[in-house]
Length: 237
Image 1: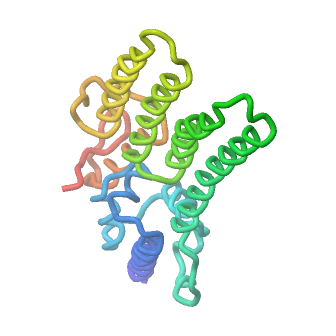
Image 2: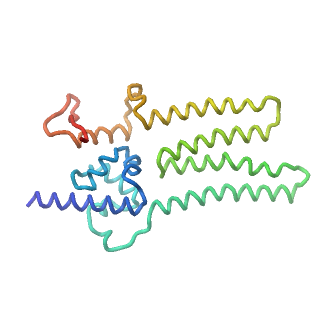
Image 3: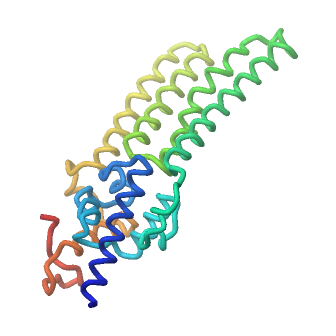
């Protein structure tokens, strides 16, 4: 009887994770990246071959904009939910539009109140790096790492462009050399965070990501096989 109940709970959680993930417009890999797991683990949960721990369930509930109880019940089949990711995309776009609204107001204010000053169009030049800064904030909260990488790169090059245009001084074009070096560092950071290229150089960190990876390894490990630190041996294979 206990085994049947366990299977029922696993089945409910599997169905709910798949349901809310699709409702949010996320792939298994995108969802896995947001909780610092692999797409293989998400696939395993959705097949009912494993159950995420309570810590991961809380993270999933936050991402899906639901409660933990929603993830272990059948309530979602009785009502239609608004897609959280769609709302987040709208909020992001509205925030970016607000930047350009402020730039437009500044442009017209200068042209009307102090037309003798000139350079009102520079408000739009400044708006470019500000747009990337705002986009970086929201991509850090709700979107995959690749988008954050693109936005941070945009900050570097748009800032260089703005400085070059605003401060017309000799040899100011060398600002692009600085931008190129910063871009190289950003690329190395992205590779360090998202590939195994520098796996041997990555220091151990006590973070959510490290905890999640430890739990993921333990989830696929055979019972009874543990290391000295208490974590179990195993793999996702």
